[in-house]
Image (cartoon, rainbow, N blue to C red; front, side, top):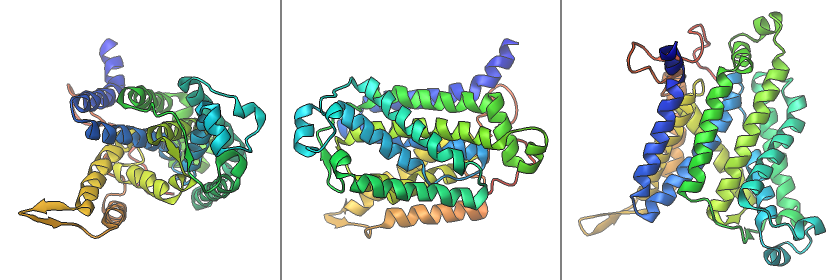
Length: 352
């Protein structure tokens, strides 16, 4: 009985130990490397948050970065000092001008508002399926970008918003990364998660067996929005400055590429995608900045990183549609075989 429980929880325990090991190794490294690892953990939270909905439902969402933006701006408005708000946001409503919340409370508020936003837009959107649902989520991203970019009195519009407390260091972000991964794993093991994956395999059969597909998708969408909001909160307080442009196409492409390349059908795939793509993008960033070789500096063409990511995603979709993890979780080390997250009858991991 105890062995069965350990075997069931092993995929989660192994991922948490991996994240802890990376954090401990980074704590011994220079500050520059620590900051890069912090950014990686924030992206990991965003990718795992996307996995909660897209991985379990089979519907790829392009709108999760809009929840990151909402969470980031809510936390910024609640934590910035009143003097900073008076300078950068003179038209801010009175009840927000004096607000100065603790960072954890503001982060939870940012995630909660993002989840509420996800609930509002999810009620109609979750009745769609396949490409139509994905396009609708992209419409949400575009609308959010336009609204935040023109709501000058509250967000500063297209101007950069300065004055955010910078607290998202390694030990502030690590607990959120662990909680997000644990929440994603526990959700996929619940009855609701199992029903949602059943609808991913065959929506018509799932509905015929009594599963309310729309409701199950909405549950996952709201949970995904909450943790996406948390990722946005941490990203804002990592940079110390907010720009609407930071939560649009570039971030969307990066998060989606990480999930697709890692494998959107398993939590292992989401984590591996975030870690592996972060390493690759960092190496490409160094190449673009220039590398000294024998007294000369060799630099790769600008934009090489985006081109490589796009090519990698294309190759994965063509030759390994289930991603690096192939739709499986980490294997129990004292037995044989990897633990699949869904039946082998699946649609080959294709994006629907």
